[in-house]
Image (cartoon, one colour):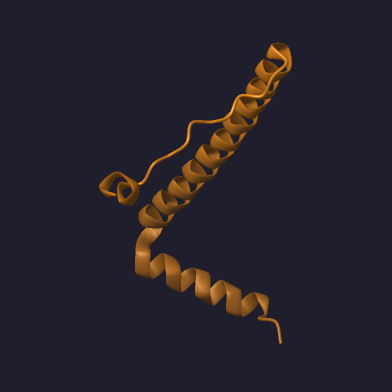
Length: 76
């Protein structure tokens, strides 16, 4: 059973009364900043992967990433 428009309106009014317009708008602004940051990071990652593929193609060879060592291997 889906909520009616009247029930949704009551919930919105209660949220505004409890948190105030300022906090809700600040929260929505923070959510928007997070989404923009996520999209920017995804586009930078795609650009970086395309650049690395171009470099590998131009060089004619594949370059292996450096191997990571753990502290457990260092202790042995």
